Amino acid sequence: MNKSLVSLFTARSCIVGLMSIFALTAGVARGQTQVEPDTALRMLNAQQQQFQRGVVKVSDNVFTAVGFHGANTSMIVGTDGVIIVDTLFGPASASNAAEAFRQHSDKPVKAIIYTHSHGDHTGGAGAFVSDERPDIYATETFGSAEGVNKAVNPVKQKRNVRQFGRKLSAAESTNRGVAPAGTIDRDRGEGFLPPTITVPSGGLKTTIAGVELEFHLAPGETDDALFVWLPKEKILFAGDNFYNSFPNLYAIRGTAYRDVLNWSETVAKMAALKPHAVVPGHTMPIRGRQAATTALEDYSEAIRSVYDQTVRGINAGKGPDQLAHEVKLPEHLKDKPYLIQFYGTVPHAVRAIYSGLLGWYDGNPTTLNPLEPRTKAKKMAELAGGTQALTAQMEAALAKQDYQWALELADHAKWLADADRELARKVKIAALRGLAAREYNAPDRNYYLSYANELETGQLSELWF
Image (cartoon, rainbow, N blue to C red):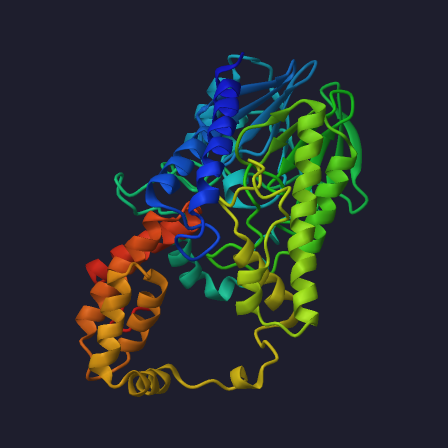
């Protein structure tokens, strides 16, 4: 059996075994993805095998390169050439994958397909081509993946670095949930080639290098996504609408609203094809009709369940803070290895759905015009019995490992002129590290650690923004 596939099965059995530990420890710390530190680390280490570097033989003519960068790239071998699906982040990582593919076919590249416009899927195209430029397929709306929020790119870039742990030390790094921590990023986007053939809104059926393909529009993680279906081989290339983790329905680096209902419906359409294999945009392919189809059905149901629960709560008058703690995955889905919250989380999704459907206001007049942070901090200190009493509560919370409360009290203390702001900063750093140690959601863990490092080295302003 292919070494990468062995790793996949090993990873799944490890994760399922760890979930029994997770069930016993989930109540120890707050949050759906907080467990004991040893458990969190073992879970992340098990997930690491989902992107162990290697080429997986999906079928006789389909090969997927996993772990060469954050995303996957795939090669479909035809009669007189090959087709590449997604191209990684830059020429260096793409060249390594292309060289590995050549062990399975040295035929020329006849076409490149972009499943969507995120840079980790498009930036290495140049590494797969020679003098003869292949056709490059993408949707009509290609390029709209990040919405219209380019005005806030400066802060998004900072948050991107934190989410993916790009500046974490080797000792601090684990992974990115659906990707390895260490990737070649210095040449990002340098191999991008613009699309030459547009997939119309109704989809497209065509034959390339003797291979029959279908392109289906697939709004979900992005509005410009498509999935690729090989009807004869019954193989599905899902792009980033499916991977082995609960989906990132909202990215904490900052994204426009991802239409969660569309995402669920797209995955349901993929499941209806009953594929014999599904190739995700990240992590290992899933082979076998029952396994692949069930995974897609469960994925669609999980997304829809979170959406429906949130909408019911909204219509019952509940706000996002309450719903983020109440909405859970259905019992029969929460332990599925492809729905563990390594990348996306249910609470983040709930908040995104709420703001995407209703905007920031939760309907409670108390929050319509809340107090300015400095004023609120002063009143909190008065309520506690003075600044020294609030500071004592902050230190006590840290000592009791009530890390979230320690963070919130530290954020009040930072606004108080008579507070020991240096102590508050140190408490926040310690609390962030405490949360990170217990966190098996990789973006959360990376963000906590990255922010702690920025506080420690003085990269953030005195008000910690």
